[in-house]
Length: 89
Image 1: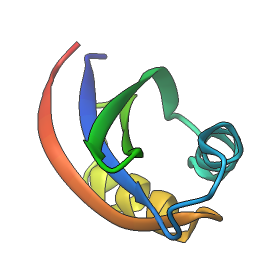
Image 2: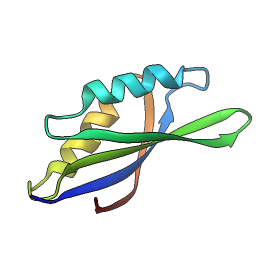
Image 3: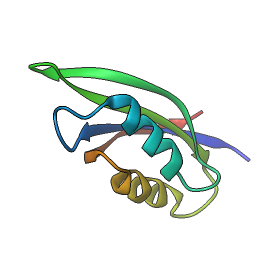
């Protein structure tokens, strides 16, 4: 069974939120079968940073990417979500 990795850009709901707490909330929110490969931080402006979550998931399950995206959107502290790229892992 193959895997894919999705790079998902997450903007905090508020500028002063702790990125570590957002990371923990995202990890907890993922559906079974998905896992975090790593997080990157991307500077935006005026000290604001976005998180790039690299999420590994099975490529064979229909609709799994939508489940991951929905779960990440509902994670505490996450404002906006943008899927940047999905590729084989």
